[in-house]
Image (cartoon, rainbow, N blue to C red; front, side):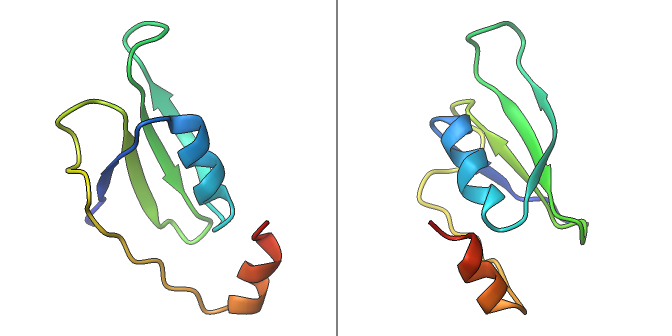
Length: 79
């Protein structure tokens, strides 16, 4: 299993964005309140992605591809 690590600047917005695609938070870690977070999110089909606010984790300007088999169902989740 390969799990991509994606760099995010503000994890609450990133979690909200991925939630539209069926991702839920599995766990979060931060050394202290106010420190950068490292978050594991996944779908019911066990597609997992790590989101990191830490500088140096996951290069900016990377790409990830989400494959959907139910595009109409996905569209109903979009704002």
